[in-house]
Image (tube, rainbow over all chains, first blue to last red; front, side, top):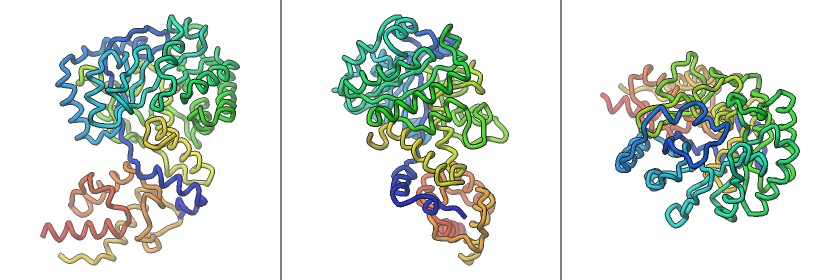
Length: 332
Length: 88
């Protein structure tokens, strides 16, 4: 029988043991239906998710809701859409109780006296030209001023076809202000004219992501195996899709056979009652979905499938470490 | 009922081998002291699956809070035998 220690040398085995018992149980929460930007390609608005539920305005109900989520075993709250920082009291209901990650466009600075170590993910859609085309303004100018040197903030840089050949310049700017960056992809389903992928471009972006990781190893939080998975949709001998996705809301998951999935995962709407299908847009075609969290979770929940060789298990460890760093379970 | 621990160990090893589809090992050759997480690569979903089978097999409920303690086949066997004795 193949065991973990039979596949790894001492160095890799220590790395494995650092993450093997983390037992991360995340769920995703829409904090509000509103945003102070309206970006082309934002799945929350393009798929009408902002109209699915009326947000709960009583902050006491948010506090009670988070208590119930903790009773359900959730130990990582991922706060997303619309723009969470419009509702800091609701964020606080999570932050006071459990490890919390807040995805934001960064235009409103999270007050660090109130949220000293909350992990913040700053969305970035490209260089100045593409930011203006997609979001109406160059947000980097504002977010870099708000968060320069912040040890608990990093950029979530969405790579589009138009960014090929330009990513190095942006990542250098991120490094210069002392932040980290994680790269992700825009899904074609969002239908933004001029920003859709062609297969050959996905091969090019994989090469560019790999090159950025090599060039900026202390700034880019990623792994080459993750680049391969997200650009090809292939893991081991399997293809990503509805019957493989680990990030389907548990309450509605009737798949048979049920794939390996995130334990107790739910994506809640901001009324605290409605649930969404999965971690991203319900209108998205799963076979072409490029959601980064779904793909890294796909790797993470399939640990034993990666125990077929030393290289496979090392790849699994690197992806798990990447996730654990992005959500502050282990240091950068 | 005083259940022989070695019988329980063999049966639990058999369940784990079947549920996880482990290769090149039998219930008799499965090391009962092998760490299931650190060595076999078991994760929380695997443990939940195994717990359901054990519940049906032995008629006991395994609390989710106890999962982190159930690190080897021998410890699981002792846990089950204790539960069975408590139920008598």
